[in-house]
Length: 284
Ligand SMILES: Cc1cc2nc3c(=O)[nH]c(=O)nc-3n(C[C@H](O)[C@H](O)[C@H](O)COP(=O)(O)O)c2cc1C
Image (cartoon, rainbow, N blue to C red; front, side):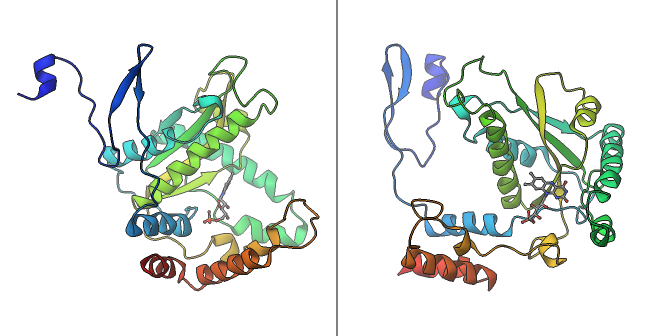
């Protein structure tokens, strides 16, 4: 018999990466210890950067295979552990498998996609129309991440002056889910080309709750090495060192050492050596 069976109380398992224990403070259970502030182990750090650098928006690569619920659960847990303003956790997740519901969302995409084509200059319209920009029907699973704008009441810590912070929080959840999905060998494609009200109606999402991201999720035959829009010549990745400002937007001199490092690191990403080089520098 283990101790929790003896006392009849729930026993909180201590994750391997925690140290110390818990204490009570004014009747509340408090975690009395910090996690060690050491960097992650080499392989873990490598894995994180690998997931970040090889995550792709996936559209045309979905396989029809079911995604095991164990994996769906894990990527949802990753999403739910995102940061949120005032710990608002404004997100919910609509898991969409039903082909009829997906068809309605796809119809909304088709309408908006045709409207969008007309917004581009004439010489870019055909290019735009030929791009594959969704995998709604091909992916076995769609997930809509929402934002409940009233989840934590009218006044929320950190959101008193910038109301949109709740939506940014839901976007953080999307990014966590996206990276976890990459680590699990899944692809995720974000579809935003539709009228949000149509998606809201298709999923029967109540007023006051906003669809933030409509995601196509599934196993994929592979990940493109570079963003498809970059490879197709639509737009290149911008040089990171040109996006840095110091102290002020139009500050005097750029910090040379950091700028040089950023340029070198970006070059090694482009050459596919960043993760390996990282491992080597950690070993030194
Ligand atoms: C907010 C947001 C909306 C997006 N909407 C679409 C979309 O409607 N269709 C699409 O094909 N890709 C969409 N994308 C994916 C981007 O095109 C993609 O992230 C970008 O081209 C870089 O490629 P990568 O994600 O593979 O690195 C969206 C991404 C974000 C962050």
